[in-house]
Length: 165
Image 1 (cartoon, rainbow, N blue to C red):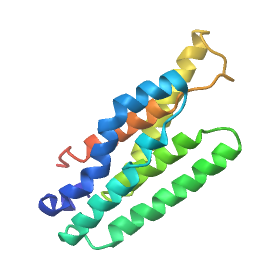
Image 2: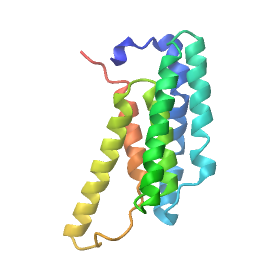
Image 3: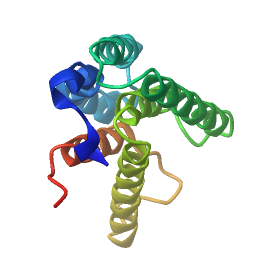
Image 4: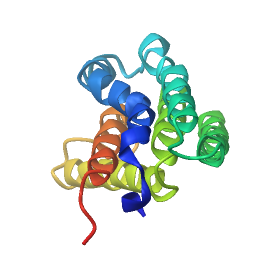
């Protein structure tokens, strides 16, 4: 699947993923401290991603189906995030970050955003379970989800560079 990518032309499509990896330490620090993910750091991932994907498509790395598929997937993930936000289960910063991650990773494979989100929710769930067992937090307490989403993003991005047989 990932071996099908013509990396000579596709490298600009990594721009959004690289941007998110670059701002991960700052976003993590802010989210842990303030329980928010600032728009000024999250939202630039979207135009950076779209520009990189457009350049990759123009260089012949793919047709326009990859960026369009990634955009549709990101819109669906964002809609889910907004719904979860309305129900009080997710912050809007998390919803925007999930959409940006889906957009940046979805160009490479529809599986990668799933890997990123699954990694994030399993890691966050494991942390909550551990904290609850250790009686350091109640199940009703809030959790900074951003660091786990960013971890999932890094894990999924790293999968791009793992050779498949």
